[in-house]
Length: 412
Image 1 (cartoon, rainbow, N blue to C red):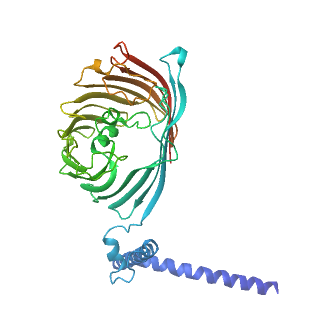
Image 2 (image 1 turned 180 degrees about the vertical axis):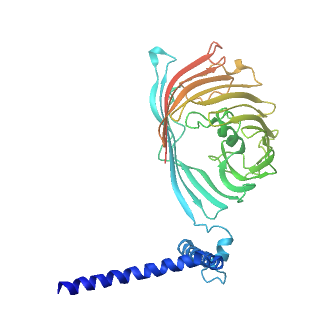
Image 3 (image 1 turned 30 degrees about the horizontal axis):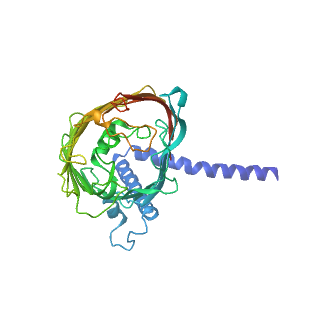
């Protein structure tokens, strides 16, 4: 019995060795036959092509969205040659700006407090590769402004619409056109290099020379790497006041990309149809900005003509810089000076703790701070700010508002 089992096992073993031996002989014969090798290689290429075709077909069937006609007569290969299949997608986003401010101006009456200066909630939707839309609300007013001690009389429960637009941008990023409520062309340029919106607005918006957000249409066309042109037609009233009164703000800008990192952007706008038979309000600005992996900064000069009344002009400049120390820390510095054609003495008697609105006279702003990126979505920036209101008190002397801050931005 044992001999039979041993003989059976030997037969099985020999039957396994025989195909291997025969295959090795075939391989040896083919290796000595170049024509046979070529035929085998061609067959392997055909097998690989067939596998790729099957994989492409499977990819097409799994990724094609519902709005693509699957009954099309074109093959999956033909559809894929047209470009990647785009899948509609959207996302909810939010940004929160908070700060703690301590006014050091009066030691006996120190004003301090915590404020939510901004809270954005929005939704971005990418309808196609070229067409997108955004809706965003601003659920916070301009804050308690602990640097002046004024109260926040607006309610956080009354959000306002801040963005609502549709944008078309071609695949090569050569041009775009958009319509609705969005950031103005002037504000976009400044914030591109300043970047610290949670700390301070841009020069023109902070000084009330221009609006940061408005309603209308805008477009941009890039001729080459050096020059592009952008234009807009807006209401010219911002996003909080909307009226159909026949008044429009026309803006034209010709950004020049001098080098990869340096840009010069002149901009001019004119607002027609002002009430009370006023002269047309005009605005111009010149921005020189530089940005690389470690430094971002620039200089901007801005001036508005016939600001609220005929021949009243307001003008100023801003110098700012951001210096990246490492992946976590960044230094921030900025200096603004704003004046107008009226004498600074005419703005005396200003009460920084009163309810008489923002100071409309001559002022200087100096600030510096350091930003710490806690995680990807949270930034913290302790900062010092000195705002000097020229000839603002009862004795026509300067008012210096010294404030230390702790700014925070959370985005997700």
